[in-house]
Image 1 (cartoon, helix red, strand yellow):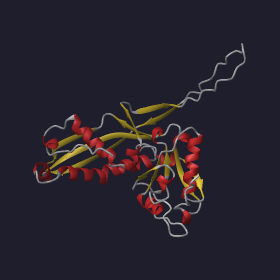
Image 2 (cartoon, rainbow, N blue to C red):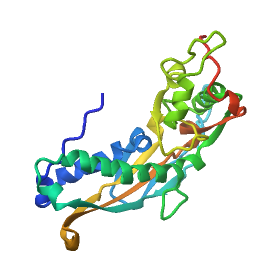
Image 3 (cartoon, rainbow, N blue to C red):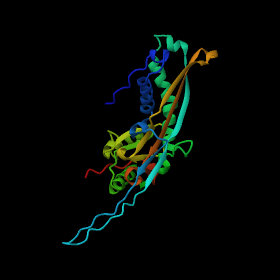
Image 4 (tube, rainbow, N blue to C red):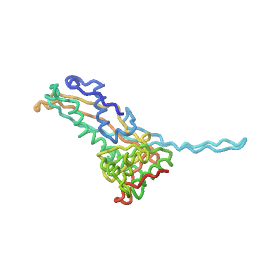
Amino acid sequence: MTTPAPPITTGSFQGVLHPHDVARILNLLVTGAPFANTLSQYPTSRSAVAFPTAKPDRPQWLGEFDPIPVVGLGDDADIVGVCKLASIVLMSNESVSDAGINLTTEFTQLLQDTASAELDRGVLYGEGAPEPAGAVAAALPAAGDDLGAAITAAIGSIGDSGGQATHLAARPSVLAAARDFRGGTGEHLHPDGIGASYGLAEVGVPELKAADVLVLDQTRTWLIVRNDFQVDQSGDAFFDRDAWALRLRGRFAVAAPDLPKSLRRLEVADARRAAARPASKG
C-alpha cells in the first residue's frame, strides 16, 4: 500500500519553503504521474547520466595447464541528458490565508492536471531536447495476434535477454476492456485484470495512446531526477491579481540503457481481437 505524501499546509506558503516542503511537492509531482512513478528512480546531481553498457567476453572452460584467456570488456556507455520541466502555479491569497480551504487538495489537483500529466507525456513521447527522449519510440516491438499473445512475446523476449518483465502499462480504458473480455460461454477471462493473468502489475496511464501498450522490467527502466528540484515563491509577481506565484522547476529523463532486457511496445496484429485470448494455465 502506497504511503500518502505528507500534507502541504497553508504554513508552507506563508513563509520560506523549507527543504522538506520542496520534497513533498516533488513527491506529489512524481506520484501523480503513473508511468513515471512506476519506474525506478535514479537521483543525480549532473546534467547527464552515463550508464555503462559493458558486455565482456565470456570465460572459457580449460584443461589442465591451458593458458587463461584475456577477455575484452566491450565497454561502452549510454549517455542520457536530463531535461527541464517548469511551470508557475498561481494560488489566491484567499486560498493561502483561509483555513477553511483545503489547500492540499487544491494544490494536488493542480499538479496532477498540469505538471504530473506533462511529466508522463514527456517521458513517454518526448522527441528529444528540450524534451526527454521518450520511452515509447525507444521500446523494442513485441508482436502477437492478440493482446495476450503480444504480452507473452514481450515477457519471453525480455526474459531471453536476461531481464524479468514486471509491469504492463496501458491507457485505463484499454485495461478495462481487457478485464471485461469474455469467453465463448460468457465468462470473464481476466476478472483480476489481464496483467495479473500473465504475472504483471497493471499501470493505468492516461497519457498513453490507446495503441501503445508497454511491458517493462521496472528494475531496469529508470526515471532520472536531478536533485536540484526547486519551488520558488513570490507574493509580488502577481500583485495585480492578489495571488501568490509558485514556480516549479525540475529536470527529468527516462532511461532504459539495456533495451532488450527492459522495455517492449506491443504490436497486436488484429485490433478486433486486441483484448486477449485466455491465458495459458500451463
